[in-house]
Image (tube, rainbow, N blue to C red; front, side):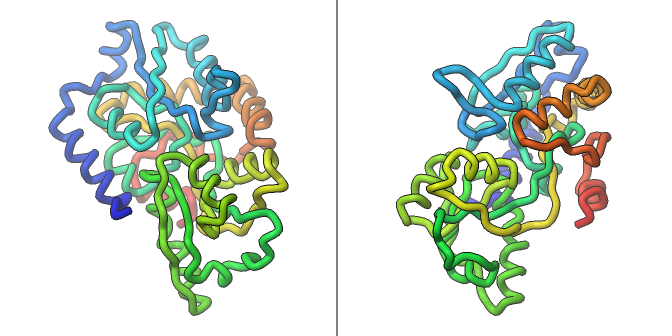
Length: 282
């Protein structure tokens, strides 16, 4: 596939520039009585379906938001590949899903205070002892989700490979991660890259099929994207995150879904690439 992450977000940013009138800030949301959030349903453990019902970390966070807010919170489930573009054009007020912060996305969105780590790891087939080092990834075919932040940070893996005398192999993009994992299991891919939380969740669920590899990026964060011209909504969601942190509910949900808590995450919203780089030590 020829789609590249930077082009995708540039297009989204341009669309947003012509559609700013459609984006509501907090006053408009309160007047309408409804906050419109976009989620996905195929990215465990953040958003997924169990017996036809929504499940995951963000499902529980959505329930907490509905308790906290004095307005309705209306959820729409969208495919990931079009979700952020729909938020950027004002069809929805924010994305309540597992979004990784990147420089490109910060051109279009501000992000709430992070709620999870997002360092990237590779996944291989269980028992594949040929991929035990970064150097072993030389020229191998890798799969990721189209439009994901992992595409934007592939240059980090490319640099790691070049230091070993190797190079990045063919990159295949998929509409969703389950499709990428299916191709990995069926030997149509050599490895898949995803955030560490999803990798841990996958390997725990299918230890006979998949195995966790090594880190292929530096630190990163997961948070909710909000359009740049909704500063009041960003402030509101920051207070909501403060509430969850102070009551201990955020730590409870992190432990439930991720198996650990993240006590050292930034507590302020992230609104620029410079701020993101400083916080992540990039």
